[in-house]
Length: 407
Length: 174
Image (cartoon, rainbow over all chains, first blue to last red; front, side, top):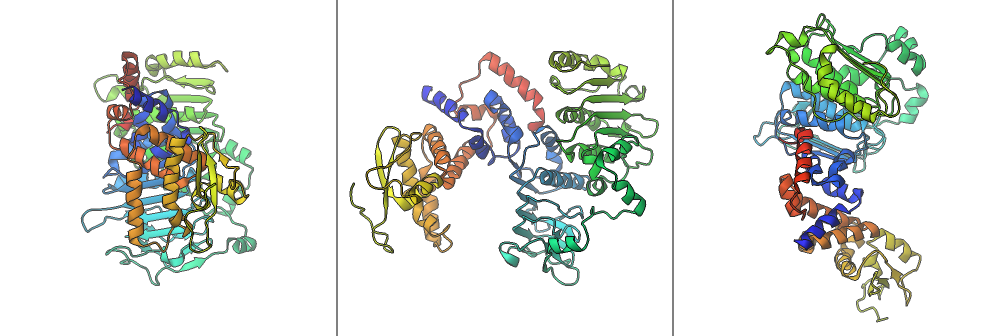
């Protein structure tokens, strides 16, 4: 027993980098669970540079976990990220795409995404048709996916050396890369299994060496999205001014969230986020995706002055979002605090929580203290105060830098 | 020091270096084996470690160092072939079998080994041990992991703290 106890001390004494290497072999859930081993282990998962999500069968079964993991981990860089799923629903596609974008945003160097199936029919998952832009990505391994033309343009990945695709449906005439791929066309396996190559459009893919510098000389690279001339002039404004202009309109929630990832780069650093319902938004689930995207793809270094969540039911019905909605709200606020938000506010129409369910139903917030040195203003509707009161007390305890100005 | 006993075949007698553990035990090994360590490689390229000098390794005790060298000697030929692209399947299977046996040891030795591999920058050994430790943990419940890694049963306070954490991290459990 004593020698065993000594083992426990020995492993706890290993430096973070070694413990990270050990934990990197485990499924992403396990390092989080190991926080029960004691203080030494409590925060290791937050900075773990490897994200391995390969043990689950369905995307749905890890979705809640991934939401929490990505929003609550430190935004530390990722060395490697591996996703592998067996089954997925239509609604899951947007999440998988978000996780991939998030990994790239965390400067991932090795990325593997796979949809595998035990039966012979692979149900390929369609990736967003957007080019990958990453200075850091060196290795990309894709299996069981549908890849479209824009995605196959890797000319914005100067470090990519190793690319492999198997069991993928490739809808595109060429694959562009920035420099030579290390193993040349041999690593490029457009047909690894029996079902690939079925959908090649005209000629099979060719490796097209795109010299970025040359094209940059001819025409300066613009945002990937073409803009009209008025929009061009707006885009030419300096960031500060643009942020100021954009803090007035609400952060829109209509349209599929991938449009956000493509065009609205400014939102990654906008200091004021005002999220409300919008009658143009036809699909309420988009709302959840939208806010998830907004927070996950945000530049962690950017100043966040305010995060306002306005759940006014008059323009947009939030009712279909229950009960997922409640845990999302909680998570968004925790994320906003991690992003050092200075002001948080939450508003609803008075009837929202009373109409459905059995009478009054508070937002179930987790029993965790809010720790923030940055929060200066917390603006909550009266009906939330009883629930948030406990947290408010914690806030007073921990807010030693600036007092709260209003509640 | 003793004369080098085994020739390399290619360039006659292999160069030997002396390593000195924290408890002052001297180990004489071929330079090629010691060079698996990135740290030692630099010293050896500078001409250190030969003759009577020896390279002191104040962070590694003799038990650990002899284990480390056992690994290095076994892996040196493959490493010399540049990651062994032309090694036969038999050679590779043999190395794999050796690796599996090699890490079948007490936990305390594993931790000393991984620390030594880290300090000496022996990448292969470091990842071999990391993988072994991960395999011991993989797929176990938190309580099983505690027992496997030799953590004492939690005191009531620790248990309360654990429960609180399991509540906070409920999303990490299926």
